[in-house]
Image 1 (cartoon, rainbow over the protein chains, first blue to last red):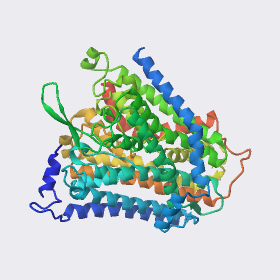
Image 2 (tube, rainbow over the protein chains, first blue to last red):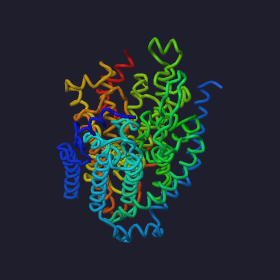
Image 3 (spheres, one colour):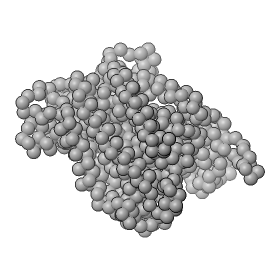
Image 4 (cartoon, rainbow over the protein chains, first blue to last red):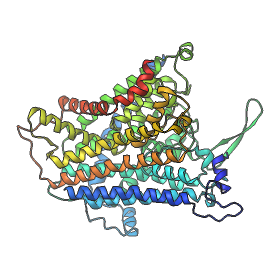
Amino acid sequence: LADPLVHADAGGVAGGVIAGSRRRAPHMADVAYVALTIGIFGLLALMLRGLEKLQ
Amino acid sequence: MSSTWAGLGQVGLLLVALAVVYKPLGDYLARVFTTAKHWRVERAIYKFVRVNPESEQRWTTYGYGVIGFSLVGVLLLYVIQRMQTWLPFAFGHGAVPPNMSFNTAISFTTNTNWQSYIPENVLGSTVPMLGLTVQNFLSAAVGIVVAIALIRGFVRSQTDRLGNLWVDIVRCTIRILLPLSFLFAIVLIGFGVVQSLHAGTGVTGLDGTQHTLALAPSASEESIKEMGNNGGGIFNANSAHPFENPNSWTNLIEIFLLLMIPVALTRTLGIMVGNKKQGYTLLSVMAVLWGAMLTVIWWAEAHPVGKAALLAGSGMEGKETRFGIAASSLFANSTTSTSTGAINAAHDSLSGLGGGGAMLNMMFSEMTPGGVGTGIYSILVMAIIAVFLAGLMVGRTPEYLGKKLGKREVTMASVAILAMPTLVLVLAGLAIALPATGAALNNSGAHGFSEVLYAYTSASNNNGSAFAGITVTSNFFQSTLGIAMGFGRYVPIVAVIALAGALAKQKKVPANAGTLPTTGVLAASMVTFTIVLVAAIVFIPALALGPIAEATS
């Protein structure tokens, strides 16, 4: 049931678990994807505000 | 019995089952969202989350609530996947990679359930149960409550209040989705769908080799997966997997489940606006287009082209022998005409015309009958455009359900309709223009183009089915498909809530001699024509490069 992607991740190659330890360090990719998520919803909130002004 | 008659029998049974539940379920849905009484468990939840259930919200508060609630849903789901290593029932699986976590989080929160991963290889049981299945309920509830908010916009007069988002979501989850999904999970278990918390079981193959078959709590996931129009499978093969969909009966029950709520919501509309014919008219539009596309897909799959299929006598590549052509076509048509995206056959193996039909279902903006909630609000928006256009042509006052359709209303309806095609065409065009995309495709030429077009059509419509044949694990695909899912879901939702706010502010206008009739055959034809026209204008060039080129070559 193993998946090469997950193994790479668990080995610290693709981000996530630091090799040789069980401590997790946030990866730059985590920061980027959280920022992208907030950006998408921020734009949607701006859109709602724009439509409010239209009314 | 010939396979054609068997297939027609299944369609007949399906229609009878839908007709049986139409009135009771539609009426019940209307009662849930109109009664003033709160259940005790609901009061406890309101107390816990400190919500006053008696206070109604302005449309802006309702809209910000949907956006905020969904943002929190995406972030929580992201974190749960990234922390899988520490969760129980992880079965040795590590953290899900960041790009896959982002794509999956946004996918399940938007009711898309596009899966860029192999579930049995990447996930244990906790992430699906604690994260993905929770969103199966909540994302479905969000779709339904937005539809109810729009209906309230038509019903209410001279107010800026659309109801209370939190009350609507809690009621939808507690009174509709949870009990029905529990009931149908038991039904599915009774018909042989697997329900297990074990990681897998060992079996010896015919050649004596030992294999491990993955197990999962499939039945409980399956019922909400179909009923909530989510579509994300707990196994990679989705509803083609025998543990998710073992036989013809479960196949029929699953198709029934994915159509049940979208169809019943037309009755709910009729009840809430006090004119059941309005609901019947929109239901007839949905039924005509659903039936037409079923005919196209079924015919195309029953008349295969290509040497292998002609020698075999049927186009069974990618289809399960236990379902055959008819049940596979029925499933493919129903899953793409709703926002489900579950599959019981490989859509990449559909014929050019059959695959094009599945794509066109989504390009109709999924309103035939569409997703839970999204179907009814999408077709209401399309009806507004149809009435506005027809009013301009014949010189009648554009009014719909007692509300005048002015610049504001039509602007918001246009935003809701144009968001999806913009996302599909821009992002698919961008992907095709990139040299790296060729390496991600299993096919070149028209079929390769269809694989990309299907992916962005599915994501932007929050369908989630895949043409497969395309590897989407790169950062580019994970990110752009995530963006398509996010904007494809919430831009129309924001526009629809704003539209509901604009409608609710208006005074109700009684119908007069100058009002264009919005029930009956003429009105239904008008809406049907508008749906087809909008999809044709926007998508025919793209379809010509993919499925049409493939079907005619």
